[in-house]
Length: 469
Image 1: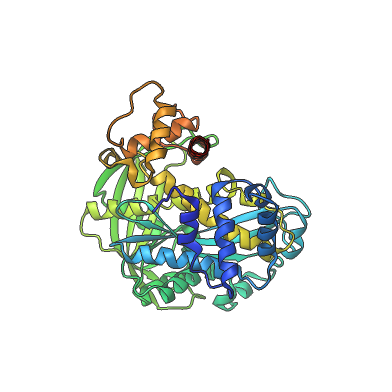
Image 2: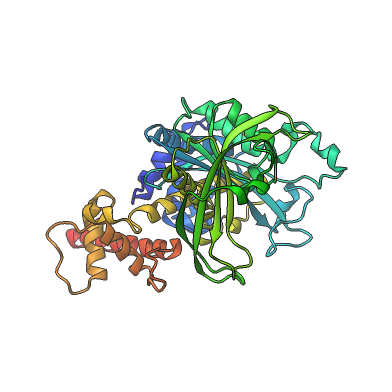
């Protein structure tokens, strides 16, 4: 999925974009190529010359080009990969892009959601995205959906009045909207599991998924009433038998210390009762998985996940596999981080109009996915030790990388492994495995990749000069 050549990648993602004129499609490919080759830089710096700079800004300002049409070209490429996989995780989440320049005039009246950007003029452009992962390899396939929106004004009124609004008028409809859009575009979603966090614990959303026979996995938030067994969801947790145990590493965060938690795994078939004001079936049958931290009397906030799913659970192995699917939800948070700060720096865009900003933000979103796919190449993957690096690297690239990283070691006759190339690039980017996790951050990985690209380009120029001489 990752291609080392940014132009080849840009053509793969955007060459079929239907923008009303083939010249516009050619331009989006060029802009994507330049931005992919110069990740984190502005449009002006990424473009090679004044003519390219002017062409890129004309593209961004062209009201005849829809940001949604640009994105659709990339979504359709993701769809092709999804249909080739036996099981895919469709991970949904929302993030906010915060700005303080003149584009805020077109982003409503609600102050920025970002503490760092909070000011009387700061505003947020929200984006709800769907990231597709291969459930078996756990590798990123691509983006399948994005919806940009902003909050025009603070919604006021009594609680029951707000709840009685049409479902489609509520911001919470975004979860169902994303799923419906994907279903309308893909021939079959039978190999897709929709994965959402606690914000999607909405009775109407669960009802929609069950009534349309969609597969889903949602973390519970509400302490819902049950038809079966009697009581509420959280009331019955303590009565469930623990079917198995596993361990999970919890990272240090704020005042929380890093630790390895022992988790007790339980599961049960339940039937949710429809809340009074909700719309939908009177009862929803589904499976519930409970992950509770045990043997941790000294921990104030113990880990406890309650997951709803339509996936079949016959044994503890099935339950553990489903929990792993939810654990992979962090990949979309990683996508947001790469898109916003650790990679493409989309919040640094300074387009003056909302639609202009969206045209470039969409392209940067797909570049962020490309960075994640670079990270997926071989990280902590023993199988990559048996794969030649030429599957993703040219012969010149790996030879230059070897000469730069291995210094005086003799170059091998056969290409080294993909595993070696991956961590060689990381070392070139200044990475050191100080925490002994084997995980390479995107910044270090991309710094190494850019250094390698520059080295290869220098070698190619030297060869041309030598031939010309």
